[in-house]
Image (cartoon, rainbow over all chains, first blue to last red; front, side, top):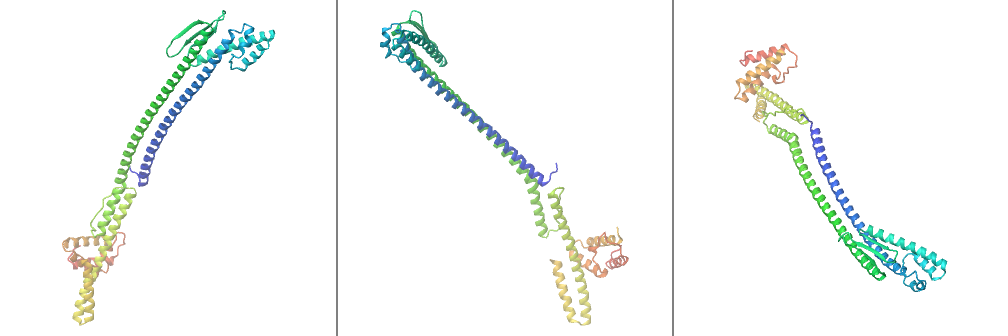
Amino acid sequence: MKLSVKARIVAAMITLVAVNTANAAISWNSFAAVASHNADASHALGLARDAERVSARLTQFVSDSRGVAFTLSRSHTPEDLSGSYGELQGSEAGVDAALRLLASGDAQQSARALSQWNELRTTTYAWLNREAESAGSSFRLTKDGGGRYRASVGTNIHETSHTASLSDEEFSRVVRNASEALTGNTLRVVGTQAEMAAAEAARREAAVRSGAVRSILMLAALGLVVAVVAATWLYRSIALPLSRARDFADTVASGHLEASFAHHRTDEIGVLTHAVEDMKNAVVRRMATMREMAGAVLVTAEDVRIEAVAAGAPAVVHGADVLLSLSSQMLED
Amino acid sequence: MPELYRLAAEVTARLEQRFATDPIGLIRAKGMLATKTGFLVSLVSPHDQDDPDKVRLLRSAAAELDIAI
């Protein structure tokens, strides 16, 4: 395939640019994947922190519910209403409002307050059970018709469960133990899951980094091979012929006019070498003409000198000698 | 091919053959040819038109150099 010098250089440059572009694209994708895994790890840690906050809220609500339930067990006795007032620890605004109504001693208001209290209790149980379920632990709290509490506690780690019919004190102890176990287990699960998520993210990041480095090294090696091939190609097709043309010109300049330079190319290098060859041939022709002219001067000077000696003209003889000397020097040069 | 160019090439070839080992002798012979003809045979081009006078002079000068053409 015959290509001009410009086409060869452009082809080599395009090849190198293409290899470098591919290298940059793969590097970009690799580091983008690393950044994505870092984002996943950050998201997992964020979820773990959220779960930890939910666990803290759950602990607070379990404690509040224990106080509410303890007071409810005695709320059916009117004289206990005032005594139980200070023991109530409900955190909801509705609890405080109900307690103020109970303290007023009004039968109608007390009946409405008890209704609201039951509603609040049901809502509290439902919320407590929902929070426990969302935290990954099976915890159920109910109260039967005889005024006894039933608690079912289990964790997603030990898979244990416990169901009991309890008095107020037993209930308080069970709820306290359950809430502590629930909190501890939840925190342990959250911590374990967060550590596993972080470890997995780190493993994926390391794998992606390793793959990226390997890909970059392979492309760099490929780019090096392409660069060497392109440089060799440019050297053999451009630099080497130019060097040979220069050597040929040096040979001609040193007087070796018999030298010749074979060239079969039609590109810029071929045009240049052809011009050098033409220049050498022109010099050879001009030299031949000059030598022929010098020969003519030499022969003429010899004839003139013979005639001048015969005619006794020393000035002409001297002029002929000068011409003979100059032409001889020229021919010997 | 013009007659003058053909004769000039033939005379040049005969002289180069005769003085193959004597370059100075070759130049002297060509110089003598130039003085006899009045022109340089190396400047005769195939694009030159024939000149009967130059042809005659060249034949005469070649004969003086013992070149039969």
